[in-house]
Image (cartoon, rainbow, N blue to C red; front, side, top):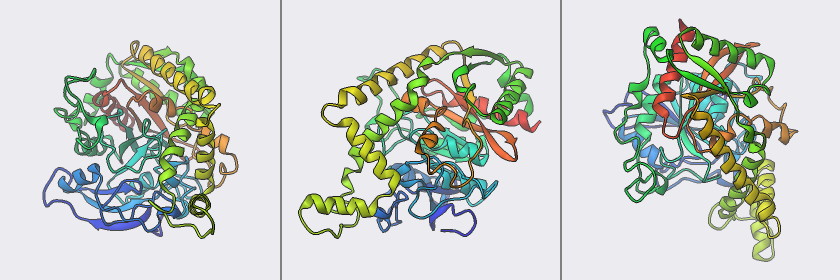
Length: 446
């Protein structure tokens, strides 16, 4: 890996087309997104030498748009972690303060942008894995609506929750990247829209230019704030650390000074969101990772004996502790006798979360919360307590359960460390989020 903040597992230079909307930008790509002929490890020893024979759809679109891909970024193994410390290739440091984590699991992507090693980056967000590191590294990260961006070529962790999302130093750069990667893909059914579906008849990105939603001066930012109604879910603010709450309150006050109205809204279901999220995510992970058996993917185990022993040997050698923990818990949740008790109840809770968001967004244009309830922990601080690590996701996982879009923009620093301001919108409300997010950005600069 590189010798700065260890943002990359593999450094490369994949040139794009000679001309295109991203021909002036370098892009870092998370290492769970397939790149033809360039190893894609997912941060795991079991895929240390794996080189996909094809490009993911988003990578194809980057190349067609003229972007230069400069590397595959470090990540928590298979996206399982919130600090980019569970990678088999070692941890990534936070460019703001190397003694602290960059967040995860897209920590390498956020660190690459924050350190100036790439102009923009792609991550994947299963429970906050784009917004978490964006907040901790002081950059912008967007989790799109489920179905806005093709997942073809993304190595699956939890299919029903994850989306590929852009990161950038500014909201404008993030929007430019979204314009290129968003859109329908015949190889990913979740991006298909037609008359037979209950949703829109055409894909929302087809006739949308997200960069046009970004405000580019203080007057436009004020205009964006005037008349805006911002809902504040009290449950997702009260649990945040005091320095984080102070930066969040200051950002809200800036919007109010420009004419925005804030209203308290309630999301009572979020009390159960973290538990529901981890049951669903681990259950899907236990199924998805079954392919890494040393036969189809991964190195064969050295154990003698029957096929089951070979299978177990390959996974014992190839997976790290966090992946083993989640696969075991997911397998348990899906096992006979426990499926109804855990998995079905988690899906009921998911429906409750979705309903609560729909009701809250009926009262406000956007919802606002601290992206992360804590400042970036010191490296190694949270690894010995998985429950503490899981609870850090309290403000981000409800968005994935509801399949909604959300953006994290910088809200200044506390104790010298970045704090993120999260905006949540209705399904396919990315234009609204980019407009308000860029207004926050401009008003902070004023």
